[in-house]
Length: 70
Image (tube, rainbow, N blue to C red; front, top):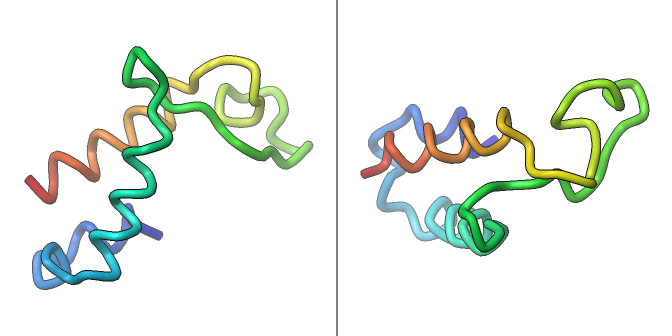
């Protein structure tokens, strides 16, 4: 949801949106990577479908969002 919302510059200063961003930022590991917290078995073969290691895809998405909002 935040990926879509980040495409709307009018929301970049919205308190509710910034709260979501803050929560996401807190989820980074010590190397600034992101790992799925829950998974759906249909996606278990993908990097974002497991909780054991950081996901390059999730990490990319988070940094794309952060880049959009500045």
